[in-house]
Amino acid sequence: MTITIVDGRSGSGKTALAERIAAGSGARIIHMDDLYAGWHGLATGSRLLERGILAPLAEGRRAVWRRWDWAVGDWGAEDSAEPGEALVVEGCGSLTLESREHADLAIWLEAPEAVRRARALERDGDDSWWMLWREQEDAHIAANGPVALADEVRDTAGPLPGGLPASGA
Image 1 (cartoon, rainbow, N blue to C red):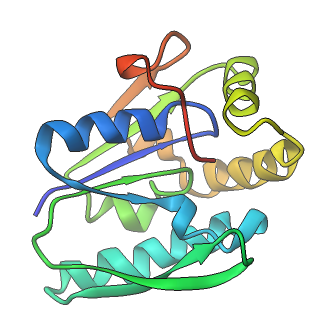
Image 2 (tube, rainbow, N blue to C red; image 1 turned 180 degrees about the horizontal axis):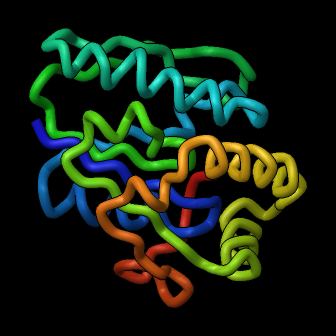
């Protein structure tokens, strides 16, 4: 089983990099956007990844969880992953002290806030959520020190891999 984690703040290019890694390796992508319990759910998403997905897989068990349905504002469709399945997990909050134990490779992406916010605005057409999300990112970084946990720290201030726009929170 190979697990790669791609973490970074909103607009840093996590999804674009995860898509490139998955395309080259055949791995499946798990998006943290599917694990957050809404706009206040970064910490919830981190715990769901750690306890509901990575821990069962490490124990050789199938992981089963529900994805967050942003349109409805509640948990929606069931998803699952099998032990041994190659995964790329992308999203803010994915690289924690607990998740790092299960990852073969951990990557943190860095870009200046002005660059990231411009990408998010272009992607979403709205950045009214920016400050609320930034506070949760700050709390994640303070609690977990993901930069220190990463095998690689990449500067993504320039064009994203493959010219793809950043997507996801």
